Image 1 (tube, rainbow, N blue to C red):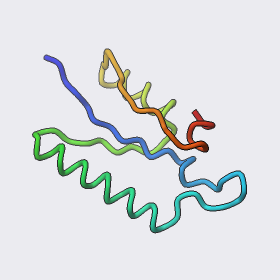
Image 2: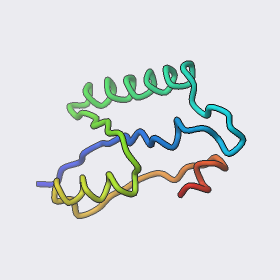
Image 3: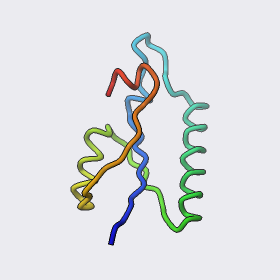
Length: 88
């Protein structure tokens, strides 16, 4: 049977200082992000699913999860902002 594991990866680089020395994700932005993740989790649970939230670099975490779960495919979205695109 096919299965789907929704995952959100909290990349620590998103909370690191920008190249100009500014905090990229302060308390307010972090709270907004967490509220969005919580809302997504509630929506998925209402559909009978769930949401795995993990901390780490996506390029390290996702292959490990895929191997651990025996995934045959990984689907993701690409970042759209300059700093995040530069990190990819």
